[in-house]
Image (cartoon, rainbow, N blue to C red):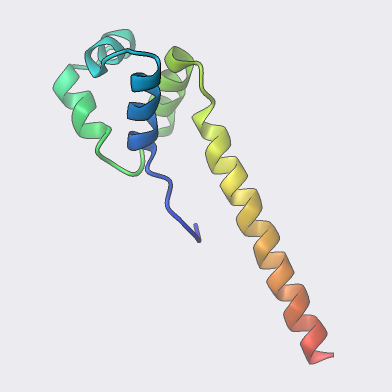
Length: 89
């Protein structure tokens, strides 16, 4: 995808802080060891199934962030193509 990268791990950690919950709490809810989840949350991207499980526990639709970004990128691409077409005609 184009544009700024979404660091999903940081967003999840922010939400945990907002909810005053720990990585250990979330790890227990999704069946992961705390240190494994901490390693995962350092990454920019996370497996879709795991992201779904995290979304359910934190009550946040993280997949929607990617959908919004994709739509924004598609609109920008269409806009660029329209500008290019108008310049060439």
